[in-house]
Every structure is written in structure tokens, then in C-alpha cells.
Image (cartoon, rainbow, N blue to C red; front, side, top):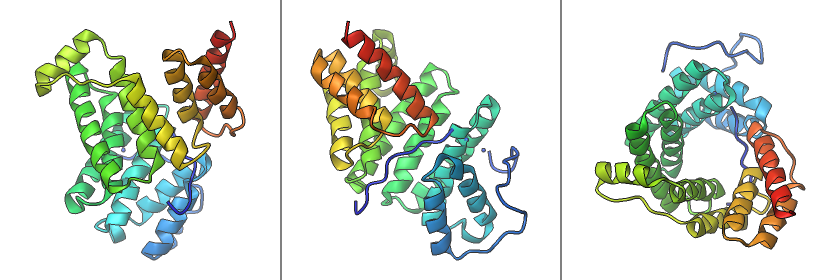
Amino acid sequence: MGKCLRYITANTDTEEQSFPVPKAFNTHVEELNLDVLLQKVDHLRMSESGKSESFELLRDHKEKFRDEIEFMWRFARAYGDMYELSTNTQEKKHYANIGKTLSERAINRAPMNGHCHLWYAVLCGYVSEFEGLQNKINYGHLFKEHLDIAIKLLPEEPFLYYLKGRYCYTVSKLSWIEKKMAATLFGKIPSSTVQEALHNFLKAEELCPGYSNPNYMYLAKCYTDLEENQNALKFCNLALLLPTVTKEDKEAQKEMQKIMTSLKR
């Protein structure tokens, strides 16, 4: 990657039934050409506060650009942002479902575009939050499958390794019954280790030093699990140097304070 952007999450629809999103600007819609629009959208979502404005901007242009691949995956991504931004369960479900549908359409149109697979994976993860165990496992399988495709297509994207690390970490902690259920569905028991999770979090950090608070938190967790306390403390201390921007950053910082307290006992 030419430039390394810190991964910033947000907290955010089923197409036409729309929840009110506060307009950040007046109702006059300025028609932008595709390149300018995409640039503006990418720039806006670098800050937490710009994410709903970025979503609005895409929504205002959806009739014009709905079949353009670079527009499609960004629109799906924006629904993911709105899922993250929203605190209302029905809204979250609404945003996750539309985002998944949009990203699925994008994959069908451009199966070799890594961003389409990335956001389909993420949105499958969001949709799974509202499902029972069987569907959760099903979506987990889709998440992993499309994440692996995205990594092949975008090998320099740190966000992908952060997500893969989280997947590996979660699978390493699954109970016997959850693994058994997954084996019943897919004929094989999902397996991963804390070491594999660690490898992916380290890869994200290598590609983009100081990548994110949550990545440092998971590095600290992995090293704590492996009883490498010095390394765990090192990443907790590094995290203190990062700005706390998003809700996820704040949660990660809290978690790391707990880790530091337990390590210093």
C-alpha cells in the first residue's frame, strides 16, 4: 500500500425502509462525478464524525452510480459503518441486511475485486449477530471463505489480517459443543490456535505500524494467553501512545488497562 491508513471503525439498512439519518448539510444535492465522489467519501470516513455524511453522499448518488463496482462496494461498506454507528437493534439489523445484499451483488459483478469480498465478509459477520447458533456458524464459514479470497486479492491490506486474527482467536476459544455443531454442518471441525491469531495481528502491525488500538489489544491478549507477559505489556504500553478515536478504541483501551493490572500483580 502506498499509504497506511489507521483502521477506524464506526457504529450503522433492508433497502427502502429507511431510518432517519441526520443530514449534515442542506437538502440541495450537488451532483459529483464518480472519481470526485469516491475521493470525497473515502476522505470523510477517515473520521468517525464523517461516516454518516459519507453514507448520505453515497445514498444521494445511488441512482446514478448503482452499477459501478467502485461505488457498489463503498456503498456496502457505508451500510457497515451505519451498523456500527447505530445503537438501536432494529436499525443495526436493517443496515447489516442491506449491506450484505449490496456486497453480495458486488461480488457477483466483480468476483476478482478484493474489496467486494472484504465487505461481504464483514457484513456476514454483522448479520450473524442476530442469528441462532446454526446460522451463526454458517455465516462464520462465509466470513472465513471470503476473507481468505480478499487476502489473496489484497495481500497488503492490514485490516484483513486484523480480521483474520480475530477469527482465529475466536475459533481457538470455541467450546467443544460449538465445534461439534460446526462439524455437523460442514463435515469438519474448525480449528485455529492463539499462535495463528498472533501471526495475523503481527502481520497487520508489520504492514502498518501503530495500526489500531484493537489490534494492540488482541496482541496483548495473545501474548498473555501464551504467558509471554513482557510482550503483552509492550503492546499495552504502545497502545497508550495511540489516539482514542472510536468506540472500539475506547473499549480496547479499557480492556488493556485490565490486562496491565493483572500482569503487574
